[in-house]
Amino acid sequence: MAVELAIDASLLMGEIVVDFISEKVVDLLQLNFKVKAITDIEGKMDKLKDLSTIIDKVIQDLDSRPFIDDAVKDLLKKLKYLARDLEDVVDYYDTKVFQKQQRSNTSFGMVRDFFSSNNQLLFKSRVGVMIKAITKSLDYILLQKSFLHNLPQGSIRMSEPSLYDSLVTGRETERQMIVNMLTKDDDYDSNNVTLKVISIVGMGGLGKTTLAQFVYNDERVQDYFASLTMWKVVGAEFNPTKIIKSILELATGASVDISEIYLVKQKLKNELSGKRFLLVLDDVWNENESKWIALKTALTCGLRGSKILVTTRSQQVSKIMGSSNTTHQIQQLSRDDCLSLFYQFAFGDEVADQNLMNIGAKIVEKCGGVPLAAISLGSMLRGTREEAYWSSVLKSEISQLGNEEDKVLDVLKFSYDTLPVRSKKCFAFASLFPKNYWMTKDELIKLWIANGFVCSEGNFDAETNGNHVFNDLVMGSFFILAPSRDFEDDSYVTKCKMHDLMYDLARSVSANIYWNSKQDSVKDIGKRTYHLQLFPGELPNDIFSQLLNKKPLYLRTFISPRTFSCLSINLLEVFSELKFLRVLDLSYNGIKEVPTSIGNLIHLSISISVSIKNFKSYQNN
Image 1 (tube, rainbow, N blue to C red):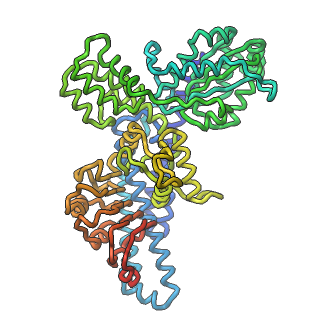
Image 2 (cartoon, rainbow, N blue to C red):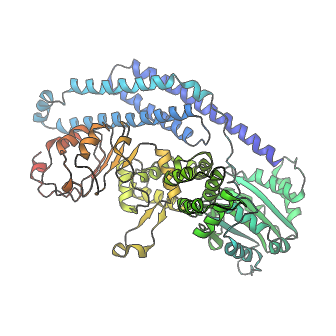
Image 3 (cartoon, one colour):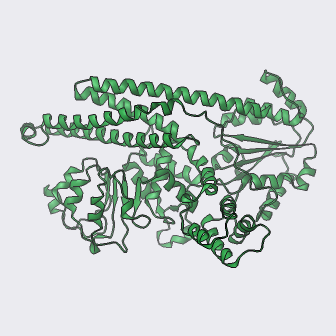
């Protein structure tokens, strides 16, 4: 019955998604026609802003779908390019209109406008060309609308795969700890609590479900909850009514055909009364407290000592479910345990070749203590004993590996798919930095704001919302906070980095949008590279010429601190070519003057610590 419910929900979700996409495609067709039909620039811009909103909604929907084919992925990429182009056109138009309003306050400004490049005829001509490029791109996308109409049905996200029940490695201490928490006879009289919630929290792939199964099957747990033990996989859909029915089915061992939820609750109460039960809620994503209360209320009818064991990737879920003081943060495996797990899947019972074992030991370092990664990589290598192939895996980025490794990133991408749109953008932005780089929280938030990923909403300013996003990414294990002792000189500065697997996920979802000199080569820069960072080190003297020759004309972020002393750079060329810059960081480069072409950077939001020693040229222009 529970399986049937899941299938029905899946079909329903698929129908809703297809209807939503079809509706938005129709809206895009209508707006595209109106943009072409309207003759005045102001009217066209109003429709372009509506167009931008709809495209963002389509991107958000497609981006959250775990299973789309290559054709739809390519279409999604083009939609994202179009969304950024729309932002550039709207920003350009709004900025120029604002500048004109400022100048029109003086008679001199009106005369100067007529003879300058700000002349209205020239301005409208430029905007017209930009709008024509937008509609041309949209025409191309809409020609492929059949891909969007024929999307496969959606699916309910299920629990992460168990790491094989018989191969639980390195979890004995954690098992004992959770078993003790479950079987401890707590004194509930002081706060009248009859049902206690214990959570296992951690990022995808760490084996939360496996640890829960390990605990669930423990003899002491089975004896303590001899009356009743139940296991329910929850997943992304948290429907209290459906979950209550499923629990009743687990408690009775029979299907439930009762439609009235009151009668279902009453029957469940009868089944749980007088029993000390254990209920495992596996893979919970719900952060809606009212839904949790609706479920919990129906379960507070067993004997004292009854427990709920929850597995989740979110600290917020744990907090809402009332297990703040009984939360176990599952840890990465030690290197030795991770290596043992890898060897089991790579070699099985056969005598292992010493050279392959040595290479395998280095490969395991890529796993970062994530059991799922060790199992996937070990399984992938089980079929070959060629040293050359093992060595190639060692040298590869995790995100470039074959089908088995895709399972690791797929598990992690499940967490990414559930993020709000702005959090997705902020997470992906971190791939602008090299792997294992400690990022400063405050600087990261400023960069998010400058690029428009985070803005003020309601009573919260942009910085406050940026802090909310940062904290959510930390709680979701996307970012790892630095221990304060690692940065004694900056004891009040919050720093973070990404787990290697999370970093590879960020790179995989951002394609070639982000580029940094530590991680990438110049050949990787493309027309659609939007964010670029240079680090001091072994850079060719003509690196700037090489970069500009690649024509990254849509570049929005350009960070190059402490690099000018050893490089040849033409600021005039930089400012003339890169007209869409939002962020410019040329700090600690000993710049003495800035060319007037900096005025071309009308989109510039922040210029971080430019460190100009002589502001004379800048002020005069």
